[in-house]
Image (cartoon, rainbow, N blue to C red):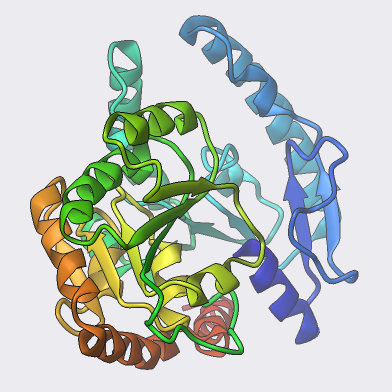
Length: 359
């Protein structure tokens, strides 16, 4: 999303600078316009990831001090009009830097994400405290941008909060023909994405639709556990785990249904990716995103979190009815216009204009 927005704005003639902390000499994963400047502050928070809580906390504050000093000097030098934080390590101090720029805070997860990590012990206490502190921080910025109307409601009555969704990251040349007996899921193999639930759901589905295939594209720490679960349920010939692919639109088009069993989301990017490829959607109604994107019974189905039986039933409704897949898919294509790049970027341009006008 950052790469897409930056490329769009620089094409309009705006000067764009992307500041990172942990780039470590790597090239950007997604292509950036050559007119976009990249500056890395060489703070390297990632070096802190595997330490115990107390030591990690001490090292984190040292890196925060280094980060603040370097960013402060750089912003005074650059004299930008608008500086946007993506709610990362700079969120606690960026608003304090008096370089003359307007400060915008942009969140790519939801209000309660920290509480949804499911961590225990001291980490659970840390997550709760940080979640409480988030609310006080967002009030200090000139604008606070959230991805969904649902999430906006969870932050309370904030005066400077704005809803701007993610835009479609691509526009495919073709769409699904809804004929393939394949369901697709996409995401990291971790607790958040709930693929353990999806595999159990497929254990129910496979009894009635043994000729259908589930393909999951991703990678992550739970890959071994997921493979073991597939083996335990004897689904090795019906569920396939695939590595991530850049041309994910091709994989959507080769499928007939998108399944998303996330326990929480900031938005649910896979939903709008699949939707613009013509796929009907079945998703847990988790916080946040699916309720904004899916109109139940029109372009997909929303399922109560954790209800694997209902999820399986909704999938099977679509699997047994080509007409329903076609209708939901076409309805989704119409709804995908709400997430066109031009429409979403017009919202960002309006936000920048409002800052310039002092509103």
